[in-house]
Image 1: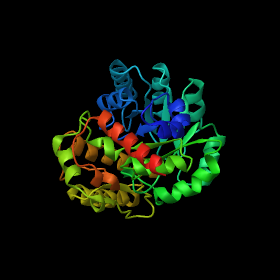
Image 2: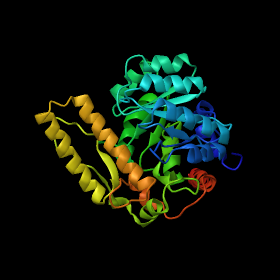
Image 3: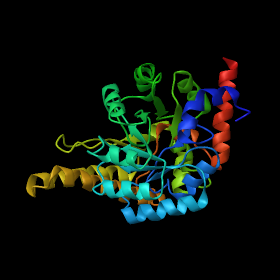
Length: 336
C-alpha cells in the first residue's frame, strides 16, 4: 500500500473493516466465486467472497474448508436471503468462524442478522433504496453495498452514479458503504472513494482472472463483448416479479423468457405457490449459469456480465488486476 498513499488513506476504514489490504471486494458470482478465485483475491490483498447461491449446507461446508486451506486471510460468504436452508447455512459459516456474511437477494429473514452477529461475524447487506438501507443499518447490518443497474447478475433499476449521490452523503459519515456496479477501472473507484465510499465491489472485472475456473469459452465471450452486449432480462408477468438479470445476449437469454412463460402458466393451472415459483426461477438461473461457466455452453447457458465487460479484454492474474486498479486510482487522485 506504500505506493498508493492517497488511495490507501481513503480506503482505510473499509480495509480495516474487511481485514484486507485493499477495500476491494470481489462480487459473489455463482460457480465463479469458489475456492480458487476467492483465495486468490484474498491472498492478493483484496477481499474474496464465496458465492453460496443454491449450495446445500454440506456443499458450503466443503467450500469454506477448501478455501481456508488455500488462504489464511479473511474472506466472506454471500448467502441468498430466499434460500430455504438459510439458517443452516449461517450455522455452517459460524462453525468455520467466517468473519463476514453478505446477505443478498431481498430482505433478510427474521432472526438471520441476529444469528450471524451471535457468531461474532459482521453482516453486509445490499439495499436498493436509502430508506431500506437505513432500516437495515438500524436492524444490525454492519455495512452496506449499493449496486447499480450496470452490474452483472441480479440488478436493480437505478444506476450506480445516482445511487452513490443518494446514499453516500447521508450514510458515509457514520456508516460503511461499498459501491458496486459498472466499475472497471481505478479512476471510477477513486471518484466513489472521494464521495465517501468505504470501498468498492467488482465482479465482472475478476470473472476472467487467470485463477477463475470459468471455462475458456466463457472467458472468450467476455473478451469479445462490449458494454451494449450485456442486456437486462425482461419480466413477462407482473404476478411473477422477476428481478432482472444482466447477461450477454444469446439463446439462453431467449430461453429464460420461455421459462418465465412456463412458470407463470403453472401459477394459473397448477396453483403453484409464489415462493415456489420464484425458487424455480432461481434454480433455473443456477443451472443456466453452470452450463456457461463450467461446461462452456456459451450459446445456451447464462453469461452473466456487467456493462464493464468491455473493459475485460484478456486473462490476467488477480494480483495484476488489483495492482492496476490501485495504480489507476492513485494516478487519478494525484492529478487532482
